[in-house]
Length: 296
Image (tube, rainbow, N blue to C red; front, side, top):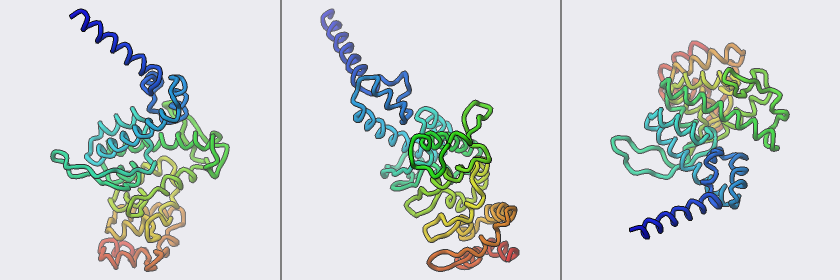
């Protein structure tokens, strides 16, 4: 019995030694889920091969992003918040999910190219989920600012010049920062398998609260008239086609405040050359047709 216990203790010690010297688990104290230069430094500290460790981290990151996607789809706000805090997930990063089997009483989550986590958030309109979306997008902005500081992937340089600290001490974009538009261009360039940005998804689901979060975080109002859909359609085309009048009215009021509404009303899709009123008529969106008729 004594010998068996001694052997078990020896094996445990060896396994711990291996983990601390050559695997990513030595990074626990440094939070290896940062998935950034911190993770790379952490892998170097552990004495592990950086490329191998980072490959493992990338796989791990994808798994956690998928887990967060399931929680968003199933409406598990606590799970979403936990995923985002623990794993520092990127809401605007492209995300592809494998098909999943039926899970208890939940319907099957989306699979394939879902766009990003922001796309899945955009289908939700409840306050707790939109609160999580707000903090996730703030994290995405902070990540974007760090990437711009260290790479050539941003149109506007001097990225920290426009950052200010909020009440929590986190750096956020100031309202006057020129490169806010750079962030939103990148965020809205990610498309799902249907060719839609997450702003189009918000429009389709009448998600005014999500739109307000985006505006609060500096999204330029003229993005509402940008061609972000698969047919060269704007977010207004999307909500008009889906007969989502509340979103349409709110967006139209915003554009009107910036003298951009007339241009948005006349903008046509690429193939069928449909204006907002034209696409509403084609889809028999009667409520949208009635409202747009008052603007013509």
